[in-house]
Length: 176
Image (cartoon, rainbow, N blue to C red; front, side, top):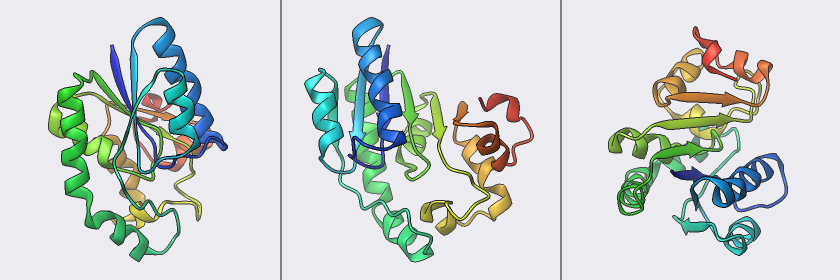
């Protein structure tokens, strides 16, 4: 099984980086192949490369700030990045796409366009000020962000029950 992991930064420190590091290494060792896309180079792609994990850099400016214009800057090159992701999915024979962050949407869109299952791993509370600028910039009303995220996913993994509840999903049993 080949899983394409999508990450929004290249930092080794922090929760999302650590959550990515361990499953990718385990998958490599026991039952499949991990491939990871990053928006830039850094210590996390280097650490994974040292473990034999194949990595790609698809440049993107990812903004986590609250300002809607930050999300608009990110959206400007979205279609080109999605095309690059689709090509990786095709050429590397990816089975599942796992987006490890709500700060990027390319993995979900590329999976949808490639008819591949998509898993979204959510680390932030969508009811707090930490809602990524991307989600503020999308033409989706705030109480429907979770439904849009759900529509783009075959499964959602939330880091806590509170995070899952913040998505306002009717079928939150899919969140875990």
